[in-house]
Length: 457
Ligand code: DUC
Ligand code: ZN
Ligand code: ZN
Image (cartoon, rainbow, N blue to C red; front, side, top):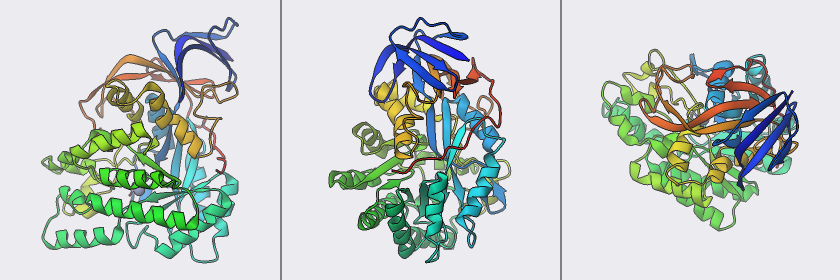
């Protein structure tokens, strides 16, 4: 099957130029000003942008948390992602305490197999690695799981001590992988949480009040110091506070190998959301929490100046109806996370590119090309170039969506951006040359997605 996309503006991380794109089978064959070759399908992309499909390197599909599970699985989650212009996800497999890393990898492979409509890879959340078991990390790297997420928060559940963090960092320095850090000071937060509960404060807004920006910035500084000591690059996930951006910017200024990811919720939503009445604030309970609106400018500036390199979603959906309500009497029991796998590309286009906070190329770079580069997928993914996978989005800058639980495709009963009108959405989405979204309809197949063995640094 050959598809010719004509008369569009091809946008990559470096250029935006009028180009035709010829897809032959699963890959891109030619990218040239004018291609006259015959094709099975010719797409007129006049007035549209032709971009590499979005790559979301931070999702939690079919993830257990206590007795519940995130409400999107690999089928519903990847279909929703495709509707939003994302063609590839890197999801987090989670080690069970006391069990091996390879067991978690096999469990997540089974979750995705036969369900994912898009190509996918995995990071591994390491929450328990006694001395002597470091070779389990190397084994994952050879399977193509080349990145490990560690937690500095959630004592007793996910938090690692400094000795374990250092051992993982050093092993990763040797095996060529990457460490992703959840940087929040778990001990300081624990003290604030206990005091809030002792004072009878149970409402959702106390989630944010017990995780102030300094607890994030302090942890970011310490994570960077530990990675520096181990001689390994570090990627800070879900950066939310301006103070944390300052830490990353300062370290990068000293030449440290540090990368930062933020998420649309931190760019577009603020801690005012926690003031909503009737437990509505629970929709926005996530870690780190939403911050004061005044700090958002630093996140945008960070993206523009390359203090931050990636916008991912931290898609972690829980239903309001029967999941978020577990914390009605106690904010610490609200499952943390919010949906976003579908809304990222449109939000960033509408609220980033259109008001000229980001150039078209920077939009593509932070949503597709940098994620591919940092996580061992480039140039197979994240590029519009001969030889790359034909994961292509024909982006219609005029297409409008008003976000709501009724208009989105995520399997969750609320949308954090409810009522927000965005301009800019996909007309056509190709995954390895096959249409998955065409004219607003899903035309792909659950199970067509392939596991991606990712490369090392
Ligand atoms: N960290 C994440 O990255 N996602 C969900 C919850 C959390 O703490
Ligand atoms: Zn996290
Ligand atoms: Zn996450």
